[in-house]
Length: 56
Image 1 (cartoon, one colour):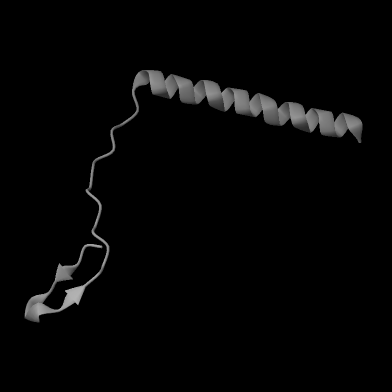
Image 2 (image 1 turned 30 degrees about the horizontal axis):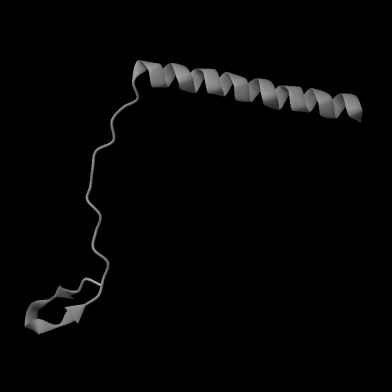
């Protein structure tokens, strides 16, 4: 386990901070895929509601 040494020689076993990175914006293909998956999710939810209403 990595230890950090503070002033005065004290040791702490705090976790090391992860490296930071910048998020990249989605590409046009990723945006298109998000829209398609969102549409499919809406169709699934609406069809489940229709089935639930028709059964009850």
